[in-house]
Figure 1 (cartoon, helix red, strand yellow):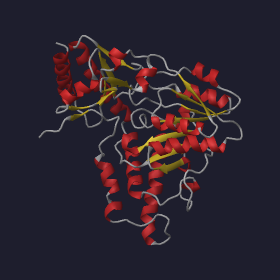
Figure 2 (cartoon, one colour):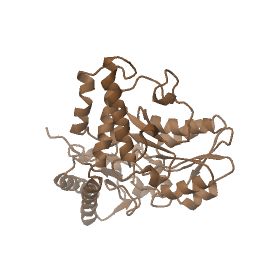
Figure 3 (cartoon, one colour):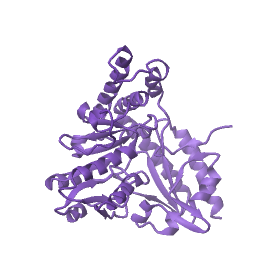
Figure 4 (tube, rainbow, N blue to C red):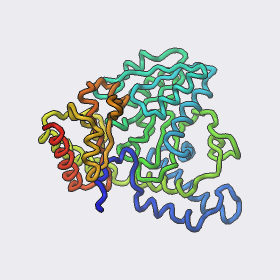
Length: 379
């Protein structure tokens, strides 16, 4: 049986071969604890610090500014909760956006139960946050702004550098969830101007269950996990050496030929949309066509349910829907709602995300399957 064509790289990525090789020694041979002072701890400790340097190399920061975590969700929790608790005596107001991942929005909601207040900024029809809205939302009690670098559903890239400039002007900490952008587009922390940045390993061909948090000195979030003092005391617990090594290699690989990979993915993404637009009458693209991830295509087919399209193409294409229908009720994603996409379009939204392993031939086959399904449903 042939596997469906995988066009859901924003959900997770396959392990890159070089990542598997980087992890293998710590599965088969080097089992020691990196905190051990004896011989068995030497290679694991070296691997952790090598990976820290590799992650720092991709972000172009100091290795000492990298903390390893269990993934993007933990990184976001540590950044947001950590800064909130560390700065609570100065204020309890946080600014975020309506299109953030739940790993940001739910964290902010949880803090509201402890006396914090969140301003959730709107976005325009392309999913963009306006820096002027950020400026207007700032209060004397604002301690943190958390806006994602790029949206996981529609691919829109936010003006993080401009927002960071506003944050800096008011001495407010700036965090960005970069889980979807790191490895796909440049994410140089000095250019972005952020104080904290979250990474998820499985979004850039690394393993699941590992991530990193960049913390610019002198930002100092409260400790996330108390214990023996690993990760400079901010995140205690014996290090997941195998996965850390995999994340490091994934970051090193991402830094090589990044522009070339961007060009290839953009060509495939645009080819996919062009085939849809040339064959289907009622189709529209969501997000910002200029400021967008090169691999991400969110498209809406008017008057059709996304779930039904996915059912028809399940044997041929693996993709994601932007809406789900249950018992006659349409559940539209919070991102599409925030962008004001009308229900008759939103309910037929699919997200296709290509990756390094995708080929143009696969894109053409996928387009053919989707077009056939849509035509059948609109007869």
